[in-house]
View (cartoon, helix red, strand yellow):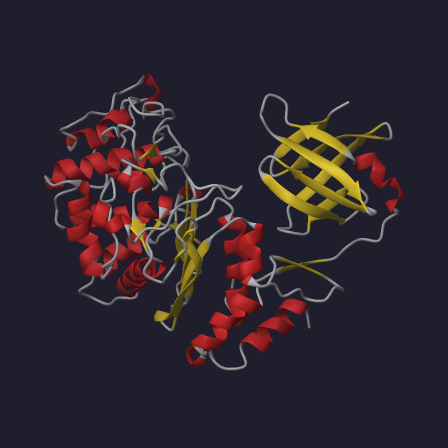
Length: 471
């Protein structure tokens, strides 16, 4: 029996429907599992508080979905470090890109009302702004369906937001490049490939406001948030003074707060939702209930099945969808906030929200721990074996590696007979050998393949990039 299988057996001594929430909360708090388990080594169990400190994440909030309901919700740490205000299960976090599938739900309600055609040209509905045509489109239309699935070929991947004291542009100004990002335009022929575009969801935001004739945050409140039961959630931008007292402050990777506590995102559909893990779980459960055929929900069963049918890039009409009815959800990354929503089609899952740029690594460990505790079919720790190689050659790997033409570098060092890597886009981690030239990160399993020419290490390949060793 593998280590993961043994852990799963320990975590599932009772059926998932009979789990004790208090036991599972303590498991997350006191026995956090790593993403990578090294064969032959004891299983490390880490305290959540220690991992939060390591990743400079002041607060984390979790809601666990089990048996088609929210089994428990808990928060740890501080919503605001300066004042010592604790995070609770009702503290608001920025949902970042999880805003997108929730916003997509509103679009689909308008489709069901006959007010929006998924396959019509968006310019047929836009009245306050028009998407400029271009020869790149080659006659293909940008449609609501393509906006929802990131196949419209539009530019602008994401948005950095604005400090609260700055002048906040309107969504239309953002689309025309009058904010801090480029104009949103057709950059690829629509329909031919998947390319993630927050810009596309900003077009959708303006379109929905034009069709409904009400501000976007009001539309979302009426069409999605209230019907689903997301009572604490809001798309209002900027967040009102009253609601600000409920919000977490965002923090950088070095522990410093985001200027003026958080950024404002006029790109509401793409990044502007303030919410809690429990409210995100309620949205996921509502969509799942409709998918399973329960009538009377925010979407009809037929529309929910359309929404959760994966296409190019593994995306449905809003959510990312794992094929073969495994799971759906989305991740989110705003300045100072990281979050994730995972809903398995069998009625299990979790929503995790953090107020730190280092939250992604922390969330992966929480997901690994929950996956073992609830015997999920995904996210369990990965077991990797360390190869027996001659380590006398380790000094050959030491050096600085840079990706030509990009501000990306990795530094490999030798400490106490062990190799470590750190640098841009990666945290500091020990490298363990799979073979003479292939190593993996102890922290997240990322593979580093070193390239040797004429007996000398000249480059390393990782995460789809090749970095040349500085001479």
